Structure formats: C-alpha cells, structure tokens
Amino acid sequence: MSSTSPSPHAKSSFGWARRGDVNAFFGLMLDNVGDMILMASLLIGVFGFPREFVLTRMIPGTALGVLVGDLIFTAMAFRLARKSGRDDVTAMPLGLDTPSTFGSVFLVLGPAFVAAKAEGLDPESAAHRAWFVGIAMLLASGIFKLGCATVGGWLRRMVPRAGLLGSLTSIALVLISFLPLIEIARIPVVGLVSLMVILVTLTARWRLPREIPGALAAVVIGCILYYGMNLLGLGPGLGGGEGGRPESAFRFSLPMPASEWSEWFRGSWRLALTFLPVAIPLALATVVGGIDCTESAEAAGDSYPTGLILAADGVATLVGGLFGGVIQSTPYIGHPAYKAMGARAGYTLATALFVGSAGIFGFFGWIFYLLPQSTVFPILIFVGLEITAQSFHATPVRHYPAVVLACVPALAYLAKLAVGQVLAPGPEAFGQLAPGARHWVETVTMLSGGFIVTSLLWGAILAHLIDGRVRPAVACLVLAGVCSLFGVMHSGLPDGPIVTPSEAVRLLKSEGRLESAAFQTPYHWAAAYGGSAILLLVLRRSGRPPDLDPESSPRES
Image 1 (spheres, rainbow, N blue to C red):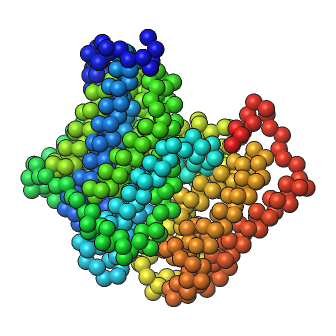
Image 2 (image 1 turned 30 degrees about the vertical axis):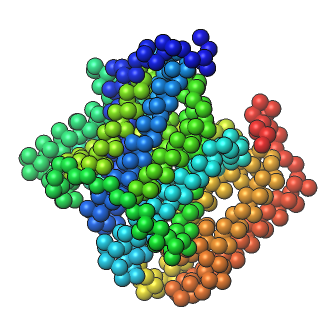
Image 3 (image 1 turned 90 degrees about the vertical axis):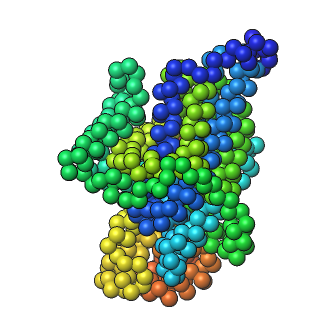
C-alpha cells in the first residue's frame, strides 16, 4: 500500500502503545525532567533566584511547551499511521533543548537577574525582570522557528555544518559536560557511580537485565546510594542542601503573564534586544536539528513533513512563552533509537502528560526536592558527549579544524565564569587588579561576549576557506565586523549590551575599562575583521584555492 494512500482499516489497526514505549518513555521523560531540574538548580543555587518564583512562574510554562509539542507529534504519528496503513509508526520525540537550557540560564536569565540586582532591585523584582527577558527570548525563538518552517532547507544549505555544529559543540563541552561535572564531583560516591551507569549503558551501549533503561537504572542506583548515605549521616540531607520542602503535593500554577509582559516590553525592548544574539543562534540550531531529525526518522521508515515538524516545534515554543516558559523545545535526534526499542506513539503521549502535569500541577517541586541532582546530571554528560560526537560525525573530516576553532570562544566564557567566582562585580574590584590582570580579564570578557555568534561565524569562515570558497568567507567576516561594531560580539562590558560603538567606548571609560581595552574597542574589532576580508579578496586574485577530492567537494548553495 502507498504511504500516501489512506486505509479505512489503518486507524483501528495502529497499535500506538507497545512494550517498547515503556523504555522510551523513561528515556524521554528523564531527559526533560533532567533539563527542568538543571534549570531550577542553576537559577536557584548559582544565581540566587527565589525558589518559589522559579517553580511557580518559570517551570509551568516551560513544561507546557513540552506538553503541546509532544501531543502534536503524537497526533502526527496517528495521522501517518492512518495514511500509510502501517502498524509500526513511531512518533517523533520532542523535549527541552539542553544547549538552550544552559544558554538561557547563563547567558540570558542569570545576567539579567544579576544586572537587575545591581540596580538595587530586591530578588523578587529582579527575578520578575529576568523572567520577562526570558519570555521575550522564547517568543522571539518561536516566531523565528515559524518563519523558518518554509525555508529550513535553504538555511541548512547556507550555514556550514562546521559553524553551526561547532557552536553547539562549544556549548556541549564547556557548559553541558563541564558544569554538571562540578555537581557530580560534589558527591562522587553518588555522582560518579551514576555517571558510570550512564556511560556503560547509553554511551558504550551495554544492555541491562530485562532491558531496564540505562537512564532509569542510573537514577535508581544513585538514589539508593544518596539516601543510604543520608541514613548513615554521611549525606547533605533531603533537597540536596537546597532546602525548601514543597508545601503541598498538588498546586495548580499556570501563569498568564501576557499583560504584565507586554507592558514591560514596551518600555524595555532595547534591553530584550541585547539578548537576541543568544536566542536566535540557539533557535537556528533547533531548526537545522529539526531538519536532521526528520531526515533521520525518514531513514528509519517514518516520513514526516519537515515543514510541519518545524512549525509544530515553533508552536510549542510560542505556547511555552505565552505562559511564562523560558526554555525552548526541540525535536530530539533519538527517533531511530526509540523505534529500535519498539516504541510507537505511547511514549510521546505519556511524556507529554507527565511533564506537563508535573509543571502545571506543581508536583515537579517534589521531584526537584527528592531527586538528587548528582543522580540526574550524569544524563547531561551523556547528552554533551552525544552532541560533540554527532557534530564530528555529521561534519566532513576536512572541516574538523573548523569545529575545533568554533569551540575556542567558549573556553573564554568558561574563564570568565571562573573570574566571576573570585572577582566582585563593579568597577571598584576591577580597578584594584594589576594592569596585566586587568588587560587579561578585559580580553577574556571580549572573547566571551556573544561567544555563540563568534563560534558560529569563526567555524563557518574556516569551513568556507577549507572548501576554497572566498566569497562566503568574506561575507561572514563582514557580518562579524558589523556584529563587533555594535556589541553583538566582543563586547568589553560584562553585561554585553548592544549599543553604538561610541556609546560602548563611553561605557568602557565610565567603568574604568577603556585603558585596558585601548586597542580592543568596537572600532578595532570591526577594522580587524574588515582587514581580514580585504586580505581574502587579495588572496582570491593572487593565490590558489586548495585541491579538493571530487567526492568530498562542498554542496553548491
């Protein structure tokens, strides 16, 4: 029977729930719950957000986005089964985007919260402002995804994989893999054992007895060790030392901040604009990732319309933002693995209902309280390893140097985080440093500013040059120069505002940083990229491009 021919008997014959859906549910559900635990723990533990604010304002809308997205993907699986008359259709998985979780926390929500407190706002008011910034970024991401639903293929051809995947790899290595490792190392008896279970089952692909999911086994074993240590008086106690036992098991909390947010946005759209260089590249990554996921599903036997997959993800992201969510959703790459498990559509339906209910009805608070972070964060290490490995697997070998180059700016951001742990905010602490230390800190600040955009462009430039394509490389250099001129990249200010170059110089002077950045102003960065572009144009006339293997020649854009 044709895959497009409807069958009157297909609907009744679709066995949408199978034994494989159980394993698939635990894998997909724990990924999403892990991301929400990660978001909450970082916002509360690292930046000092009020606990109840995060759990009752930010979590419900974020969970609602997963609910809506997985319900749409479930419905699409039923539709495909009905049209094709097949009984083995597997739904596309959708969940919270892990790179965006880190990107939103460390590059949007956290900095907005810290800046608001520096202006004298109390923690609750500062959290409100950061929340509104997060909502703005999520709505912008959703609109961008919907706009890309019809041009996703063109975008994929225009952006070299080395640039896009290199920027994701930088997040995967520096943020997704390294930062959770700090929490794992805090209680190594629990964290390292859980990590070993993850590495054995998910990375090395050993099978456990009775096909027990590796992620579930890691959490269960970790909890046994964690609570065993607590019973012996050797552990940090319930809640992982974060405190805050939930007041009730169930509590309906689904914010509707549209009127508050729109009033704030009218007066603060310039502030929101500052964070777009973080939100849009992350959204672009989910668009290209969604295309790859759809192709992967088709290779596994389930053909879904790419545009509808991207549009559904955009709708889920928008719905999450309208109800106060701050982390975008994305199609997951795991469809072939879930299909191999024997899953159908039951696992996405169950994930939608569980994750959505946990956020909307408040029992995520108990999950956050009872589930030790050191047992969940090893899953994130696996995600970071998979993203990194997939980046190299999906990139031509000749572009490997471009992927590595794209990771370098993220190392500057990691150095900036370390400096922030020991250097108090404000010009006073900066001015007390020795001249050499001030210059080092200022240079690290500039290299880390907008590092996602920097990673994408640096990786794209080198990939184009390796392919002998000068014009696209020059275009990327010109774009990098424009971004540097207005602070999208290489901002010398800790909060990285998007301002005119003259305003940036004035702010550098007012904060006592101009002397340390004497030759690194926005004008200097723009001139550096412009000079590099001119150099390439000269080489294009006088030099000779590399000789490429015909079989590995780049696709024509």
